[in-house]
Image: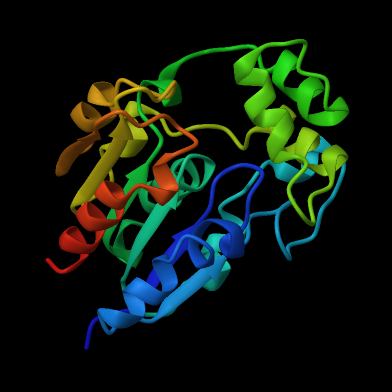
Length: 222
């Protein structure tokens, strides 16, 4: 019997908003797959601390949710980054990974001050990228101060050396208009990676992309 699939959402959303609302849970059930949903700290039904220091280890809630046997896992954006960090530290806990909405952004050094302020205040200054993040904080159940604290910390990012420890097959999925791309540096850093590029797809559209869903389901079938 196939193991359950762990699903980890992106920044500003939740298990329900990303995976239930977009049909992933029902489609996985049709495949005979159970699901383990994770809400990252500061999101969904998880605690929402407002101190940035509380977000040092976003992977803790993922690790706590893992069963004893190796699992398959799907993550988007912040959830994908977190899954990669967990899998690098605990490669024996995963049979396969699907990570979407991540790529070269994992290796860039950038100042998130403007994004943090947009999330905290809702003021995007007319900047489309800031509008995306500020809008996420308006989703049901969100706490702007907690999300700003999460963004301010970020939970770190895996290094190339970290990623070399991931032994399972990894499907990397990214939209051709996603600000997180290109995906090549991530694919090159993983020992066993396959890349799927979604045509005419930006970051926000990725979780509901039929092409993403089809690619992930096909990959999970082995």
